[in-house]
Image (cartoon, rainbow, N blue to C red; front, side, top):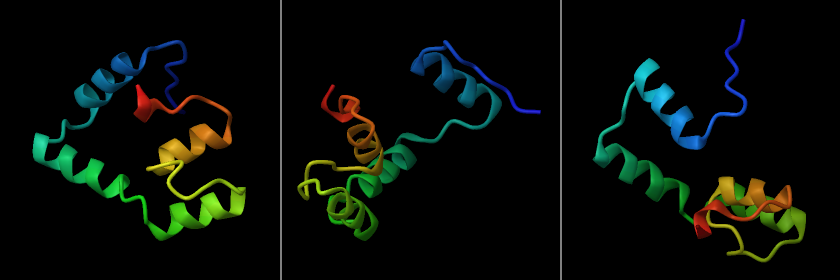
Length: 77
């Protein structure tokens, strides 16, 4: 049985994840973010081309999903 937390803020969900999972170190967070921000990652490039979007319009797969679903980019906030 899954746990849903609909209606919760991103911060609430993150705090729940840290409390019920583990909290990565600052170094782990930096490494993760750098890997996801590789604008030339082959899969991201493929998905952008497939969707007819300019290369560089999304820096992460998360950005691509937001753009593809017509949501504003969170990375621009």
